[in-house]
Image (tube, rainbow, N blue to C red; front, top):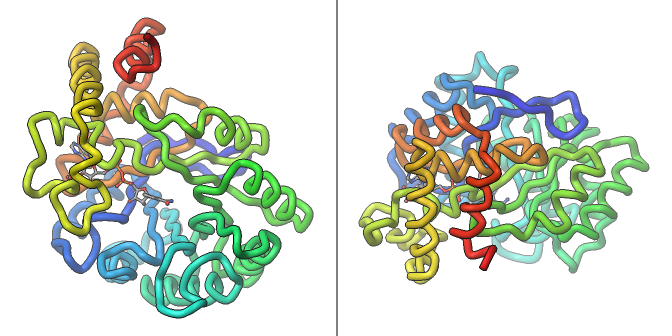
Length: 320
Ligand SMILES: NC(=O)c1ccc[n+]([C@@H]2O[C@H](COP(=O)([O-])OP(=O)(O)OC[C@H]3O[C@@H](n4cnc5c(N)ncnc54)[C@H](OP(=O)(O)O)[C@@H]3O)[C@@H](O)[C@H]2O)c1
């Protein structure tokens, strides 16, 4: 594994991080979940990304991670970066969703309890919520750090102008925001316009979620929708209707390019992201050790020729 500094902080993250959004809940295979986490750590993946609501049911990914950690990895705590988040619906009533101080403070305590951890390395506000004053959310995040419940703060899916305001507020109080997390992949380029330049100019890390477009940017859907795939599962966030002819047309062309490079499509999709100096790490999901290993293989070849980069843009429909 290779590691990159997270913006201009002193913290390094692995190029490949492992996310527990899918495949680590109570509906999933616990022994496979254990195998994937241990394999990841053995391969130098030091960063594991959680959120309060990962499961299903919500909370169960944290509980399962906690069990796996307490049994197998407890002695390696200082070698690991474990993150969690709060911001989406977690429990009933007005205090179980959003970005209020009440919700965030209760949520981090619940997440620490579920995982059995003493602190999170990174705690994120999972999304911007216009109904909560930004000052309230930022102050709650700062106080978590001051209370020793989190070492660093992260923001996820904030509009660029709100992220900038939050960075300014944190700077005034000398508590830094470490990292910004957003979706970014060959088929989803929105962060390039504002978010990535913003984070570079502020010296923040930029960590990518759904780098494989939930599996679309792999060989998973080249010949239809396999039964055990995310798109086929009723609780999967990828919907069958997202896998359109247009998307598969692009994916097939990208797959040909990957073959020419001697990579799998998953490897090339991740390598394309890691080729960008603005990207600190990509958080992959996986439903098998084989997939995880394939993804780790991407770091062997992250350089592209100008011609390859042009061909990729053409495949993605960005050049006519
Ligand atoms: N901040 C946020 O709001 C937010 C939102 C979403 C995600 N995240 C974070 O980002 C993490 C990753 O998101 P993601 O799971 O959508 O990432 P992803 O890497 O784009 O998709 C993972 C899925 O792709 C398929 N896959 C992965 N590697 C493969 C390979 N080598 N070959 C074939 N198929 C492969 C698997 O699907 P199958 O299950 O079908 O095999 C796997 O479950 C999450 O776990 C979470 O930590 C954060």
